[in-house]
Amino acid sequence: MFKMKDYAYHIFSPYRVCPLGAHVDHQHGLVTGFAINKGVDLWFNIREDSIVKLSSRTFEGDVEFDINRPSQVKEKHWGDYARGAKYALRKRFELTHGIEGVIQGSLPVGGLSSSAAVLIAYVMAFAKANGIKLQPFEIVQIASEAEREYIGLNNGLLDQACIALSKKDQLLFLDCDTNEYRVIPFGGQNHLPLRETGEGLFEIAIFFSGLTRSLVNSDYNLRVYECKTAAWNMLAYLDAPLKPFDKTFLRDIPKETFEKTRDMMPARFARRAEHYYSEYRRVRQGVTAWETGNLPLFGKLSFDSCESSMNNYECGSPELIAIYKAMRGLEGVYGGRFSGAGFKGAVIALVDPRYKESVEKAVTERYLAEFPEYETTFKTFWVKPDDGARFINDLKIYSGRIQCKP
Image (cartoon, rainbow, N blue to C red):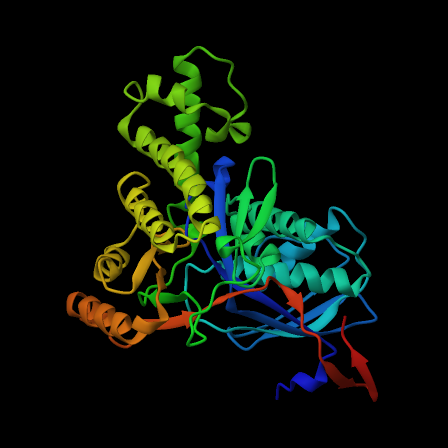
């Protein structure tokens, strides 16, 4: 039976939401995000040997491997994320100590980057076990590398950055080309303004469609290739030097070049590029809106981002589109968009807390009227912006000693 007191260390790695900056991190664009107060918990002890033993309170089966040996072929099992973290860390450090632990996720929802949250938890745990000191952005890079090179998802840094770098009630702004980032208070204040009632300005609704998905098996990677092909087309039409495909990004090509060449390339590639350049502008405007305390404008830009995701990036299942249409225009909803890749999963909304009940009721009724088959699986969750991944500081009794975890 699982007992928290049996473990000396506890990491909380939050899920994340991205209000602006959709589908552009892999093209070195600009992104924003929040960590939220739901996520992944990893409880563990450090072993004297190099064996890793893991169990899950969310998925079936146990995982065991040697942290000091190269990772072999993926097993298409939840343990692949632990092996991926080992893979990326072993490229940089010697790993001699394993862990024994239990992992658990708090929301059964796709689109919140649970895979990135899990990877970051494992990277932090393996580093702790082996006396490795990592800066927050190093954790971001190592976890992202694990997901790209071992798991096989051609992502950027958005997910990992939100999970590792965020601060409670503040907006993370990241330039995925320079890796420069800021954590920005709302309205230039130290904390999110509170109403006289003590409520925050907004809470985040997560409308789970009832569908789950794997990004590796979706069109996520295909969209990445289409963006790169659009960039190659623009360079070729202007007879400019071409870079290797994996080194080609829309960020490297001025918008003026796109305007000159958009009618020459196939329409699907032009739409992907249009999304990138318009999202770049929306993020700039959104950061200014956040800094100046203009939440209605920030929310509208998030709505606009979702429209571009549907029309230009061409993602969004019928279920997600139905949720989006159901929430748009409701009183109390500032803005929102698909969460994650937008092929299945969830839709997020920034909601005035005074309207939580009416918003949830209206969206539920409208969605289930169109998709009654999801009556038992559609869920609404309410979350708030939170700090990034961290060790939980509390006293534990372990092996007869009281230990205070750093």
